[in-house]
Amino acid sequence: MKSNKPKITALFDQSVPFDTILDEIPIGVVILDKDRRIAHTNKAVSALTGYSPQEARGVMCHNIIRSRICLKKCPVLRLKEDSEPICEHTDLINRGRELVQVRITFAPITSGSGELIGYLETLEDIRALQNRTSQDMHGFRFSEMIGKGPQMEKVFQMLPLLAQNDSSVLITGETGTGKDLTAEAIHKASNRARGPFIKINCGALPETLLESELFGHQKGAFTDAKENKPGRFRLAHNGSLYLTEIGDLPLSLQVKLLTFLDDRVVFPLGSTKGFEVNVRIIAGTNQNLERMVENGSFRKDLLFRLNVVRITLPPLREREDDIVLLIDHFLNTFAEKFGKKIEGFDRQTLYFLNNYHFPGNVRELRNIVEYAVNVSQDSRIGIESLPTYLMEPDHLSTMPTPVSGVSDQGASPLAAREATTVQVTGSTWAQTEKQMIINALVKTGGKKQKTADLLGWGRSTLWRKMKQYGI
Amino acid sequence: MHHKVLIPLYDAEVAPRFDLASEAVIVTLDQQRKKLEEKLVVLPQVSAEKLCHLILTEGVTTVICCGIEEEYYQYLVWKRIEVFDSIIGMWEEALKRYANAKLSPGDIVDHTTDQGGNQ
Image (cartoon, rainbow over all chains, first blue to last red; front, side, top):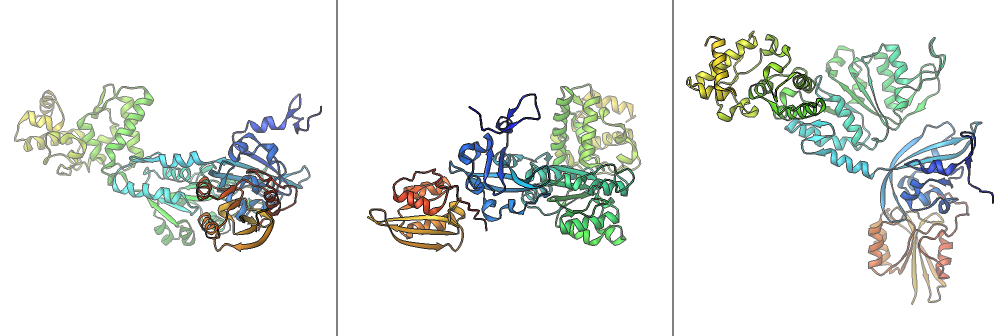
């Protein structure tokens, strides 16, 4: 008996039933004819809807898929031969009476001659993804970001709300404060999480290259344009595009970005034909865009469009509660990564780090801990395992030293922070350490055991250092 | 005893979703399941709760629908309303099958008729 099953004949030595390949695809695939009747579905669709391919065949798509979007504004009706795929987040009610959150992508199917002959729908069950989003935010973290201070708590509360809409986001903050992580966290927590997250550094490429990189080009648009290039905007279709260092975007491209934000259409270089693109724009910068607007180096209207939602990330020096948390996190991460048995930092080093001003913010702290874990040969990391640049006068100039209010537990980072700050200007580490010892001796009335405890050292270390500094 | 049947509509079809139906037909059948009266109700807003409320206030005994959430299905059953769900096809054909006592939940009653139904 001859089988009526469609087969793929040209790919392999022997013909292969089409459904055996389709069934291996882990997301739901629905093939519709021109009239939106179901021609074929795969196993994943059966699992999602409760209808087998045989039951579904010939039925109008909306009766099997039953998604909200099908009934309100069927996206397939908007598709033409050359349309880009349309992606929608919606819900469906299946045969088991379950309401399932899904992400559906609709794309046209064209014949060899370019004629529209049907449609392809792919369905992804995003329930697990949504559960993960709520799991992402627990304890002192959101996605990959960590913090427990009030500033970060405010940011963490904002992020899930921002993720749920498509407004443009502007992330500002000093270098190393976590702008990239924030952008990625927004993308991951959003309905676009299954779509691409494309990042481009606006300051990394010359103007002409950047234009081609962002908007793409048509074959022959310039001497080296040997083939069509889609550009980052089109690559990010149905996802998010993160424009980092937006302050470095040349003025001519600012106009083009402005046009895109208005029309959502990209025109590749050398092409008169525009492509409609569904992209969420996230921009990041460490520059003061308002000042740049005043200087005339950034367009005011672009700032207004990007500034729909703004997140300002606090510098690490203002996140006093987070330093110890981040130190512990990075220490565990790198100790595990490098296979080292490290218990932690000694009290003096912790005190030092806790009072350092971190001009490079979290990135600098991360690098310091990575270096220290690499270099340290003891189970407790000492001050000698910190990068040497930290001991240079410029870095020490704002270091406080403990002189009062420090009890026996005072060497713990948070208690130590309460110590009175004394500006040590133009000193080296040796001078700072000598000053620390003197201050501690003054505080304890010259009692060496108490002084050693206060500094987090043994009595013999204190004696050795006092001898070394001639105290 | 009369049968009062409510079918949520999507043009001439049984609405694919109970919670998204913007109109419904209420048909009264006599004991022999012959049509006595037919009434079209346009719902002020789409809502499963509102539709359940209408079903109860109208004294409906049977609901013929397609996709319905478990919560509303169980509620209607608890209220002693007979529910035929996952019915796909033209509502008149579904009603005809019900009148002939040939309708079962999950039936695809007529999918050969060309009916786009999209607004």
